Amino acid sequence: MKSKSFLFTLLLALLFGLAGSGIILPALAAETQPVKIFVDGRQVDPGEAAPFIKNDRVMVPLRVISEGLGLKVDWDAENYRVLISSSSSANLSSLPADGKGQFVQIYFDGREIKPDDVSPLIVNDRTMVPLRSTFEGMGMKVDWDDTNYQVIVMTPQARPVDSSITPVTPVNDPPAPLADGSPQPAAVNNDYEISIMGDSSATPEQLKALLQENNPLAPDLVELYLQMGREYGVRGDIAFCQAAKETGWWKFGGLALPEQNNYCGLSVTGKAATATEDLRGANPQKVRFIEGKHGAFFDSPANGVEAHIQHLYAYATAAPLPAGKELLDPRFILVNRGCAPRWIDLGGKWATPGFDRNKYSGFAEAFAAEDTYGHSILANYYWKALPPATI
Image 1 (spheres, rainbow, N blue to C red):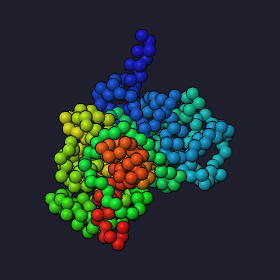
Image 2: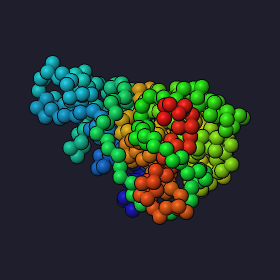
Image 3: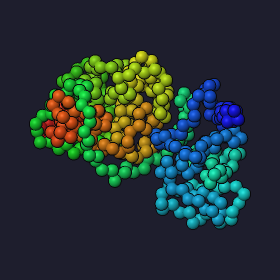
Image 4: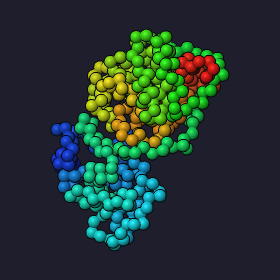
């Protein structure tokens, strides 16, 4: 009985505490949902250092979120302060050695971060800090999703792509039919070792000509794909070709509808939405679910294209989103980041099983025959946009 009373009191404190800190909650959220923390698009597990309320401020574990942002965190026990740096070369030698004080001090790249009226404190050997004032003081972006009860912390600067990522060996998957009935890849000796990350090679004119040939009434999204691809370092030309495959050259005909601006089947699982789906940190003003419909709805073609590019980015690299970008892909955090650096690695991951069960006994056999979902994007779509001399 005491535990239930304590839980009810804590939930009430969370409701009024977040409201007092400039984060407004829906009326019943505190009674039904725990707070979730997303850092650069990934959900962070605070472990034993769960967020709590102190003087109307949300207190969160400093190390967990900072390391989630890719920052280096050290504890200076002698001077009772936390030293955070954005690189291993940050100069901390100029910091004053003022001895152990009454309150924990926080330094970010040699600059003291002074939170608001609630001072950092130690709880169970964890430094807890007021969320918004601390991380905004470090130059991070802090948002609140009042629909899904989520705190979102984003770094303003993208860090380098993880070059240590290696291709994942394909594994056998249970058989299932291909969704789009794509023809077998042409029997030509082309290079399938094309990375998802990189500069586009196909020109706008080449892609538009291919689009015109297959569906003259399709929306012209070529420039959007090339532009968004450049902004994320993703091959926008091949992403456009993947969208052509997923939508049947924008004729659709499957579960997704043209008005969804969903060009890659995001959240189209075969089960109709309830409109209560978790957006997992994606901007609720730009993406939503509608009861009885299949997959995510985006408020504009540009945001639908960007969500597609973000999903490819999640598969291709473990790096944070580029500077100034907000999360639009509701499945971004579900991806095993960096698991598919090449287009041919998408089979069995993006598309399951990613091969024709009527032709092959398993994914490995189809992969050896260069006849999987990823191979098809290149052979049946992308290479058809290029003149023979460039293949």
